[in-house]
Image (tube, one colour):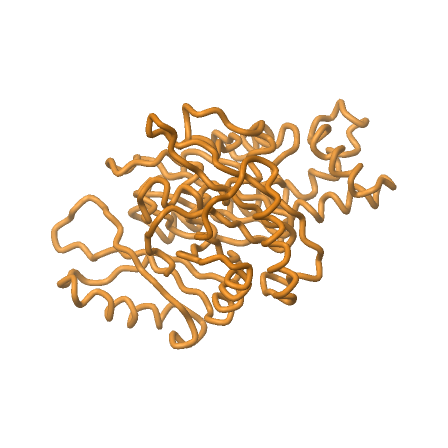
Length: 360
């Protein structure tokens, strides 16, 4: 279920404070373009740390999301949805070379040594990773594990909205699919780090050798920064969010007051990124050096963040382009608005590209 691939479906991004949906279609020339797009904010009572607390309430919001889209109209009841990063486990593991029919049991045995809960209490799936062949090399496999109660509650909320979930994905997967060029060609000789700055947390994703290698979830959130700005400068949250986006880290804006508040969070983020880069270098010795950083998520929408990170980390840093794999069709929104739909677009691209893998 985590890696399966079936007919075209809409991408449903469910997070603690918002839900988004995107459906794609092919035009008469066979090119992908937008069919429909929709977004709704959620009250804080629906979720608590990635777990659904009000399933009926979530179902009603999903129904409203689908029936009253901002752009276009949805014409499918099939859904590819994502699962919360903080409640999932994704990791590359190695097993000895063996016949195809023996891989499943070998992965299950190996998985039991990597996850903190009994394998019987989880849904899990795996996928072989294509890497350059080496003599007697071990077989790398991408493992995804999710507690059963998380999958069951998400599935129930979707089913109760009269929708059919075809696949559930760990959030890092559609993000990478959306921001990196889709290709089954040879892997690049550098790794990419993706930083997804969301409303309630930030995720670091390292993609290398045609696969996600590891992910890290950080307690750094765009909403917390907005609340700090609002409290410090005696603004409403709506005013604080606008000030964050417009002023950002620019010392010439708002007398540098917004930038000073943002620096506290960004400096913490920079330290976490450095720690993750060191971790990858030490624990993935066969991997490539991280050569670029891509930013996504609504929390990354403020001025000069890319330049500040690039200067501090001495790496190329840029805002991700979630419309990358949909060109030359025109994007429905400006990039600073579209970046919040990165996950939903990646989910929609799964079946639209007719591929369930993340060869990037």
